[in-house]
Image (cartoon, rainbow over all chains, first blue to last red; front, top):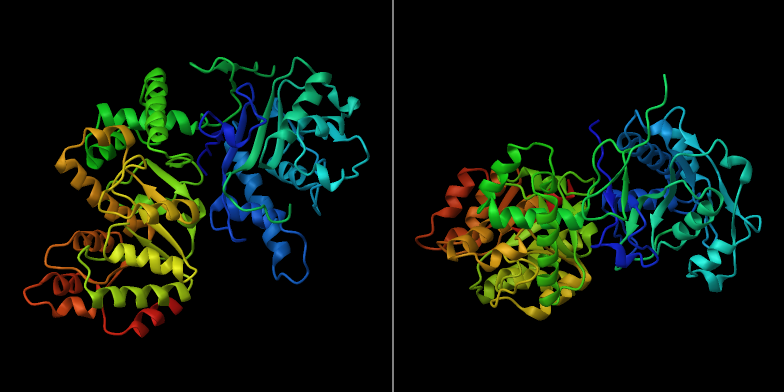
Length: 211
Length: 310
């Protein structure tokens, strides 16, 4: 497989993720632009397969979830330079910090595990309130609220990472990323922190299934 | 073996935005690609054929990788300003080399490196797409046929691709929307320009609720002469047929851009259907010629319905 080129949030897309500033470097594979509950695009349908709530009534759902997981893992593997990959530290962004309904907080961790041998993956961020979702009113909360709800697992900050990729499935407002980055920089201020997403949600797309 | 040193390079023109050398290939900044591609249209290529040749000599490279960074950035700014002036609030790009570039576009003779779009981008990858084309001077009978055909196609869950011209295209888009279907309009102008012959209200609705796409660059179009505008029209037809599984000609006179488009579709290995009525026009020879080249003469709509069931 040839190398995969990631896209980067730039001046043409940043205003759709309005908590991001031009100091933030965020990468993504493609756009999430599903509407009317259907996804056709390669990244949109993958996000659907991945995030769809578990439902025994949907045939082959487990198979599709697993296939989507493997596909993203493969993309990640081919987007990074194998030589410098071991120098990066991957940190999954904890979910449900904003009351998102999800049945599988661990998916980004599992994707990373499948991406390659010897990858440095650390669950360095966790929810301060033991994973309890905030009240529904904070679904659209900004980075400040999310930041208060996050904490760094100190024991995992050593050995000191050389660069951190905060990994999440879909980039929406950027609040989650900003909160995570701010928390991390408190604990490891000298380390560059980047964002890595499967897709960025376009402003006019519909709600993301399963979120 | 000591671990290789971590390199963090700062991109020209974006000093605050460090890029880490972790990636297997350089990442893609849509804004910079837009500028580089627009710059190439202004300075290095004046036709789709020349543009294709340029990229054939630089296989696997992005526009930004053959254009100076500051030239790309300043041209991008000009293009964005121009789009803003024309009232294009939001738009998306599909860039050759990125994961979500529609691969079917590569089937055309001179595939565009950049596709400009507004609206529901996912429609580009919808499983069933049919292009409905024909004359601008539509007859009442032609309009009835177009309407009936599009209703059938929407019922079979096809996405309708057409060109936003008056005549067949307008009826096709409007019928698809009225029937609760989805539709893609391919423009022969950039997103920043309006074809005075097409319906602006319809265009706004398509951009908001469906999909508008074009391969025509923003800045170079202003200086385009009659010949180049015609060239954009021809390319538009090829993009339409490339995006669709099949192209259907509803009604067209002796000389029509739909015919050239159908020929291109056949070359791409796409199916072409011609409604029976086209064959009955005195002095019009293209239907039999296209039929000989592989197009299918449609005697009844059942024929299309059966083909879609497969």
